[in-house]
Length: 596
Picture: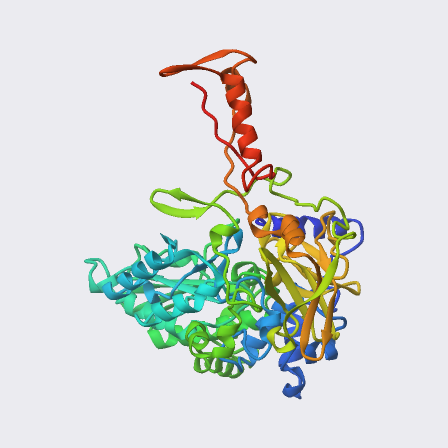
């Protein structure tokens, strides 16, 4: 699940140090800097126009084409410093966004998406609840209350997302940024408005806080909470920043995190009014954004800060920087945060009203036909709602797929098939196409002037998602990183760079404005890569020993109410019938036989 990664890195760094070495802090092979170092270079560059895009920053401070590590980091830095576009996927920045940001939704198992509308302070109107329920019913979405007082709608196809957002937007619901490294929520208890113990209106303040910082991009996700009294029902001391009401205002706590190693937040200021809380939070968050490492939460970042002048630890240092302005940067912190607040846009609403942005969510660029989510993975009933079937464990059937032969189409008669025009394929990203029943991914590497075509199905878990992965290079080899588990495949020959899997690739050529791919006949292509044949099926555990007892020996007579039949012949007949069916003999074909 990746939860142990920070501990593994820490152990590696300690062991390397014992051996006289050190662990590189460089982001990746393309930038010889850590995130804080690159942020400082961009932030202090005298010519801001020379560092307002990834290509410019790469040319000035890096090398190569970039990758799935540095592109999202630079995209986040641009969103935190410049924030020039209405969305993070406008202006060509979709090529920088990781799995979720590129779709403004969270990719789930099987390649479907979840939608989390913003619910400031956890406050919802009945009309908004009804709108979410009606939308979920219309699109067959699984619904669940999150741990942060929101409603999560699971199971949407990417092409459905703009329509879902449009319906939710009519009820006043906007993006909850659950997909981004940004502020997620500001949780609240009901405070003095209802609770007999509350001493401040915690809900209203939580709504104000969330509406101020919504959409602010950061090195990692941020969470907050407001409790209406010292009873702490909103668990504010477990958040990146949290407020607990007192009779005189609020106590402000910073640097709390849940996760693998829960950390209690520390008191930054006591008994301050709402405006002062926001002033200090502005500075705290901006200081964090400017100096934290990639994918570093506030708690580990805060623990690494220098001690205060009097030896009071990192929290004393923060008081000196944020309250006393010991570094002389408070004006800059205030200005930068106010710019982010003023330049906020609801990204969902921007997609809904912008045809060019909406075009990015089309399922296949070469056809209006869609393949439903259940065409790619089985959905099963769970307490009255549908969810995707469980993924088999690695190494079992329906994982680590391999073609029957490395060059399966070597002897096939091929032809050049036009799959669209150049303008249909966005630069420096992958785009899915449909040929027969087969999903393919076409990659327009405009930076190099090269085109590639591969299967769209990642062989690791047989999910049709490769077109949504970030493209880049590793030691000069052009590659795509699967958006689910970051398996990396060379775009030219399909070989996995970090393993022994392989994807099928197909030649691409451009004639005038036409994009053509050299393919075998549809029937041959579908036989190997057709969606129906690679669909992840529901699997059940089988008690081999127990079932073997029930299988009659050859020639045994089995009693069925009303007649006697030869059980062995009946089984052979059923299997023969199955082999002749349209699905016959496939590796995913199953047959249920009950012998009585």
